Amino acid sequence: MKFHVTFLFLAGLVLFGCASEWRAEQPVKPTTYRLPAYRSEQSIGNLRKLAVLPVHIRRVGTFSIVDQDERQEAGLTHDAARYLSEEKGYEAVPVVDNDGAWRAELLVTNDHGSLQQLGDAWQGAGSEQDVAAAVSKIGRALKVDGVVSIWLEEYAGGEGVGAGLMGMANIFLLNGPLLYHIMHTNAEAVIHETLSGQPIWRTRLSGDVERRGQPSVIKAFFENLENAIPARLAK
Image (cartoon, rainbow, N blue to C red; front, side, top):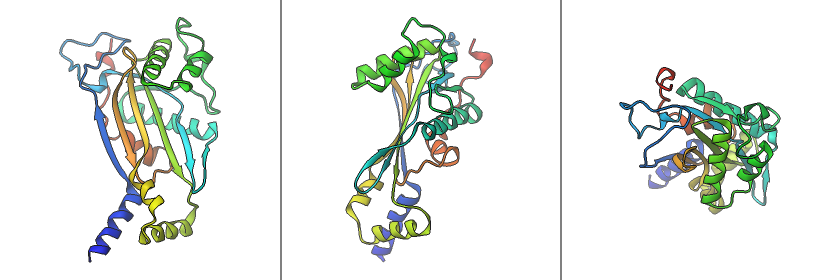
């Protein structure tokens, strides 16, 4: 009986995964409008205008990790911006077009560098300080209150029924590498505040995270995120 319970628990992790959420204790301050005095400074929804950075996807297999192409990443970036706008009330824009190229029309000012320089700064950020600096510059250049970054891994274990059976067999045999895969964090979405560049909200997923677009991964990221401040109050 104990074995069956363990098996079902692990199978559930593969199918559904786990999620954890974190938020900073610091006040959340917008940069594109003045926050009403009666509005809580702790609300993530204060960051009404968001720029969604290119989603980074890695396909993880048994022997290698292969980066996905920019069109796949761009598709999920647009899914994220759409979900945040339509379901949560934010003014969210993807910073890349459908081919993965940064959108020049979003640049409001060159005071913080060219579009190429902003993209390079984000891609090359190697420390928390670098990330904060890059995020703040991007947010100010695009005139948004916050910046969203997302990364996830795709497990290259095959497709179809055969892959599902293989996954169940791996669990049945207590495959070490697979158990590590389904238990460790393999997807993350972060909202950074433009004013400070610091992360103020984060959600992490673990389990068999696949790039299925808005209905699964994006919803799992943002379904518990509070709604944006109403447009009539963000003036």
